Image 1: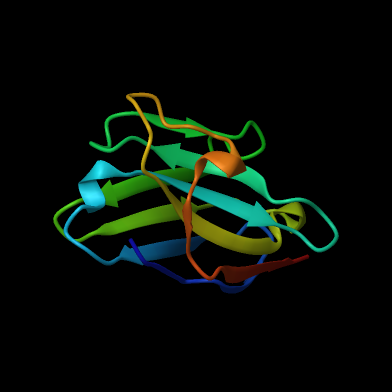
Image 2: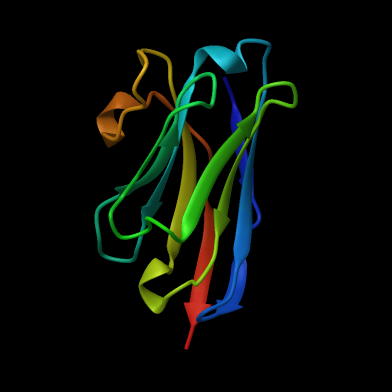
Length: 125
């Protein structure tokens, strides 16, 4: 599967942004999907993940209540709605696909075999 992330940009603290990830191929619904981010000088970290059917989601504690992951299997899309953005949310955001997921979406970087190119989110104060 090939992934293309979009929707990043510059936003003021407290603002909102919606990231999208388009996937190629007919097998999109077989993959658990996740969003990760990497800030300058830091390791890539888990943000949110969603199960193959979309009925189960997981979030990093730092984004719970502010970010929402969703997917549309008919359109081969996964999205990340972000509200109440903070300076510390500034990072390159990556969507990723996990082909070995069972029911519960996984949170480890090493568990995702396919990655998009990343989209930059900059939150200014």
